[in-house]
Image (cartoon, rainbow, N blue to C red; front, side, top):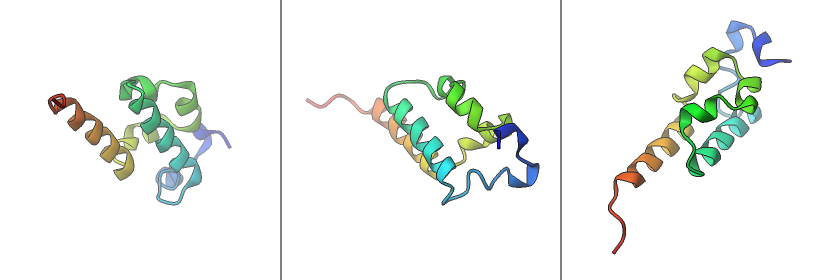
Length: 83
């Protein structure tokens, strides 16, 4: 089933804990962000666009695992280099 054919009622099911597809998507985004890519750029990847609706992409940042990884990466950029 294509992402765009999800009924509105299943919007959160895709991103719910235990959703293998949702977990793989979040892992992909975290991995790409860890390689230095901007979050907005990753959201435009064909892989992400094909798996999600625009509304799901909007809600991705609210996922705890993804939010934690993004914040952790940002905090690392604020730390001074080790001596």
